[in-house]
Length: 595
Ligand SMILES: Nc1ncnc2c1ncn2[C@@H]1O[C@H](COP(=O)(O)OP(=O)(O)OP(=O)(O)O)[C@@H](O)[C@H]1O
Ligand SMILES: [Mg+2]
Image 1: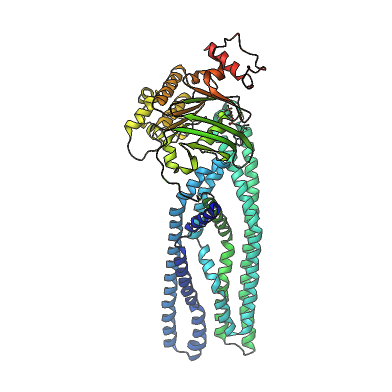
Image 2: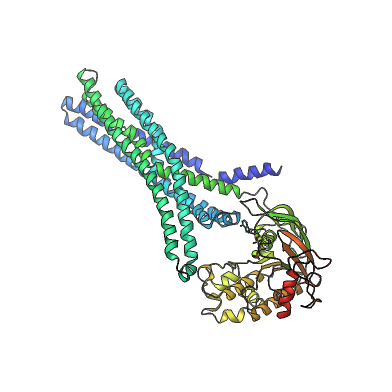
């Protein structure tokens, strides 16, 4: 049932890419027909001039023929111009319709294990398709089906000439197919090598500070140079291939044109053909083969556009949803995590298995555990960033997928381990790019995060631009703006992944106060922490270790505050009645006592 409706949704979404193009396609075929019929003008004119005007010596006939030919040529040019305008507009419309969808897909791609470079490439795919549609290529494709008309015309002049042109067309077409077959693999590889190169460039730029401080920018550059070399190699192989095919087919066409003339002359000598027909056949044969030649010349953009379109289609389809979720009342009661198993998308490797716990409104949960244990993985499952393999995460009984994305987003506040702010102002970052003015909401969130006084001291206050990745402010400030963003709009479920890693004492006090306030207004707080100071306000504690929930319960049972530092168990010996947690209770206790 579900898979059926998903298949239908995918088909529908894929069809959106080419929506409304069928009517235009018919129109383009019709106009191409006119252009190609009119393109016989040159041949017919030559034939008439030679066979009628010259043989009769009539200037009047010559003038009449010339006027008719001129008018027909002008019509042909006009239709050609109309056709390229239509194609240009199809390209623009495609871009307008698809670019936002492609961007939406690109935003989702990194969550599913793709690099950001690959995600950005998806946006470029739209450009590739549009620029192909705006170029010479599509015209040639629409002219190709008319090749038989010219061959038929030449055949009528003389069958041998028709056969010769047909043979030429077949050879040229075979060449086109061969270049397609060879170019396909190379162009895919060239694209891969381009992505590889961009990946290195991007990671070098992101690590600028480290490269400078430890002086390995030179080595990083050499690594880039190697990738660049590999890319250039692929590029030139692709260009060589297309260039050789292009040159070969051009020469072939010239040979063919001369051969038509030669054969025509031979037939004229034999008395089987008029002089005018030789010229007419030559002109018609070159016109017949021009689309093939053009197609070869435009083959790379065509292959690139086709692959780009296929990728776009694939990603649009991947994003299809079988059922559009219905609006539900905002959650306000509980969070239920029911035996979830989570794997990193794209790898299938299980990182967290069989985790269950319940949290009621007004409760705060601390999640602790060793590095790499799976805390962030749990957080990703709770926010729906990563899908669960098995089990469910429910808010007031409804699974996360049952909520429309925006509604769920409003009910969730999330402070990731690496804060990541947008290249926008403080206000826009806190308000999650709210489109309407909501200064009171933004200020309330900043105040809840204890950040208001700090923000108003910034050069332009709330309107201060934060620069790329929010680099214009300090790490601690970024973390607190991230906290304000998580608190904006009074979400029901607030999840914070190591919110205190960059905070000073004042920041930690603000965090504890924020958690108290959240609990007081009936929200649920999940806070991942290494430092016990962040757990001052939590009621429950869960220990995540080696991909399992090793313990879950009231804070005082898990962390044992009653034990003094001296009475701590050995890290290797589990506390009686508690699962072994790799000395975590002890470590927390030691920090708590020293704090
Ligand atoms: N995108 C990913 N793809 C594959 N494996 C991943 C990915 N992210 C994390 N992992 C793996 O999952 C495991 C758990 O990682 P996770 O980030 O959940 O740990 P953590 O408990 O949050 O650690 P820390 O305290 O250092 O933040 C690690 O072994 C890590 O290598
Ligand atoms: Mg983590």
